[in-house]
Length: 132
Image (cartoon, rainbow, N blue to C red):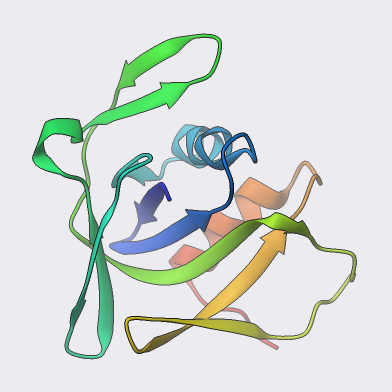
């Protein structure tokens, strides 16, 4: 579950191996987000927030398939503000609000999209909120 953050808010990207988690994280990083962690993520509850960080041995490293292990600026720990589920593709133009509970913290959830603007929409979400 690689989280990345923008404006101190993180998105937790979940899915099976090969679902595109690190690829989406790299796209978000290209749009200005910072890497919190790649495949191994430490999660804990801090008050009403879910926090994410990388284990010390993996901090600032992300795997890019068919390229190798890349170095990146480490941003953790960060509060998780959104979950992206890479195992389910979104089919609704204006999807309903969805959520998921992790460690007793209810968080908004969006599904995978192949639309070219999806990474930019995630970064915009982290900088603000969803209106509807």
